[in-house]
Length: 88
Image: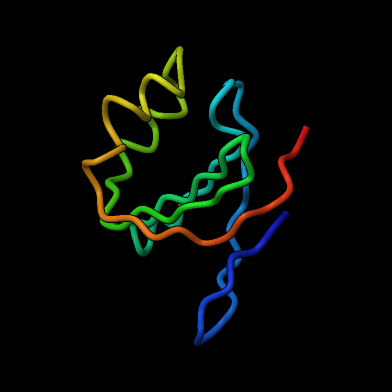
């Protein structure tokens, strides 16, 4: 389990591996409605005001990359968190 740190405290989230050529891992903080995505490139992003239903749709999508491109990218406020080693 990895953690994402912010200035105030450590917010542990559980990362789930994704079967995707684009996305490596996803995590979701239901209390704050924040989606965390780690791409195969190693980039990690946090998406704000992300509804729980959308997270379930991402997890259930046949193509996680297509779902990201059509339903997440350019639709939610985001923040780049880090450039991390790409998990294999």
